Length: 243
Image (cartoon, rainbow, N blue to C red; front, side):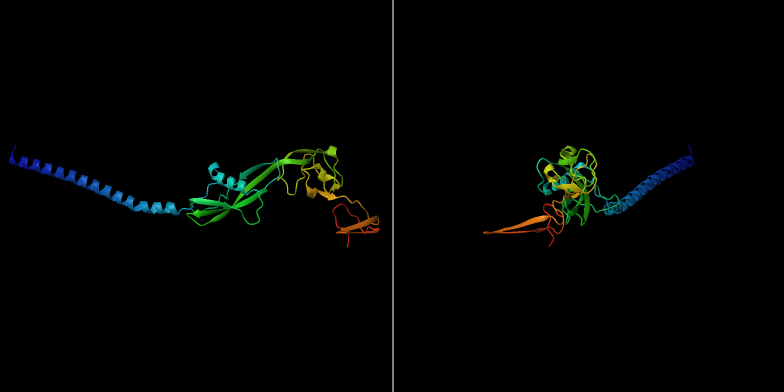
């Protein structure tokens, strides 16, 4: 091999090594630039994820347990032989709240834990917010129920009623729990068969009419005063007389 050939071979080898070296160097630089870009973008993405509001989850049983326990502790003393079911609702899905590490349920002013109602939930650690959470408190117990359709103005006979377990909170009003509460009262509205009879469905039947002779007796300590007269208006047991 001539000196020229040897020289050209050496130059070719050097050029090849140089290109390989440049290729490696460029690859390392590209990797370094990509890594630097990723590292620079990571804090911004992390900050965005932290600042992004997240809704409070209320659909899991674990989230409901503290609320149910709180409501159970806050219930007033109810009549004997009753069963209470507590159903926790959900917050408005459009509501967005900052993340919170500890929440506390509380009673809203004027709240009655009966039927459909609401309690308050506030954040104690991690944020400052309070919301209203819907709940349903169903009280099941023995009540007076119509055994057949009852007409307005009628007095419910013993054969037309029965005692059975019912949801006492299903309708507004005070449910009757003793048939004796019907004595001397009539219905002011029709009652369907199977419907719970409530105190608000009744009115006292007049026991005297206007013009009937009456005797008034007032008893005090050591004395009794009696007088006779005529009723100025109709009235029933427990109703105040005209002045």
